Length: 244
Image (cartoon, rainbow, N blue to C red; front, side, top):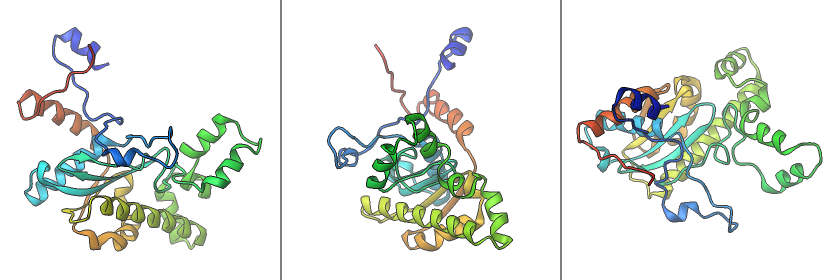
């Protein structure tokens, strides 16, 4: 789309931090089975944008920073980011905490049995794990506001599931902090669920020992796309040219 618009108006076009940005360290890609490599798929655009905003808060260059950044949307991306590079990621479609629509990491042996039970097709299982998992599977809604409403009305199941999602998120943040040896400038939260004081208070209670907490709620993508192109046009960064 960008190329076609740019061609018409005779201006340059840029792609900024697509989901397949691969900055992962080699050891992070290895799984327990050869041939099943862990993939570098994350909400890279929003993650980098939130880290830049955190750097502005502490007066530090992105190239000198150390964060764990968590994008909390329909799917969650939790990453260790050193000097602006995403060194590992949970890949929201295949692992990490469950989220409003994703199932997250699942017990392998029961999952294998489920796959061969004859009850579900490949398409069914993909839908169950990426679009109808997490909150949707447990509570039949992916809207955290609805879940909070139920909790305030005394729904104990809704509270347990919400706490479980917060527990898994905090656990993933701790794991990513350990993967880079700690010594963080802080933990950064972004995405739609960063608007939820109830959810973030549950997570922050468990991870506040890691350092400062930063919240940048919502999606920063449009701003991040514009600023990414601007940094190249002003010479602050160099564009990488793909293709041949």
